[in-house]
Image (tube, rainbow, N blue to C red; front, side, top):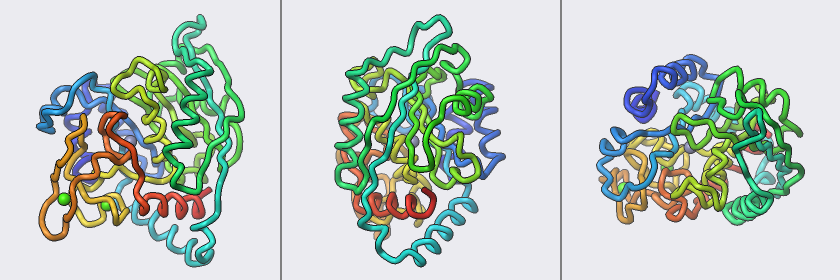
Length: 310
Ligand SMILES: [Ca+2]
Ligand SMILES: [Ca+2]
Ligand SMILES: [Zn+2]
């Protein structure tokens, strides 16, 4: 387990329930789950970031354990060796299913069709430099209080996805809920599709969609970030200043998540760590207004992961 994952186990969770969730995830290395969880004030001050403001609804991805991560890299290398370079140029239009969950009495979780439309535009714009585009296929509405507040790796999450997920390995299923617990959402990695296809997808805090109330995370980039995970990207701070970090060579390593928009931050220094922290990258934790890029290396990784797993 990496240093950052350990930090979340120790500092990033506020309740016994949340700790139990993390431990459960840690015990199932093939789960490949990505959990975005609130950091809390302790974590924020621990980051020592004076720029951090607003609510503590930030992202706390559960990294793959090192053995699983290595296996993913090795498998992807083998598949690409067989497929040549064609994977680099193929374009993919991804069918998107959005499942709006509400309380059993129909209240809560309001996401308007305008917000859905705006979110689709944000996604297509964010991935515009890649070969991936997104087309909305269907919106569903479900009233179920248990699902509405379901946390990651719960029976309720499994039941919800079992009932609602549509499409094949290339289909993006997004569930908008009010999961609570300081969470912004979570996603699954491509590498977990084969073993748990029904669990594949992205869960989003409904108020993080464009125009929602979760400022400064309400411009639609929580979805961008989570779909980044769904494409096989890790956090830019994964592994801290270690060599492999996020397995993308053109994203400079950073020691820990960045909050707010700390321009000029340089948390990993020295010859091996040339370059400022990639705080404007979609896979960091900065405010939506701060993050606006995937790197070329991340785009190549998306293509590679897609070829290998989807
Ligand atoms: Ca990197
Ligand atoms: Ca650096
Ligand atoms: Zn994340």
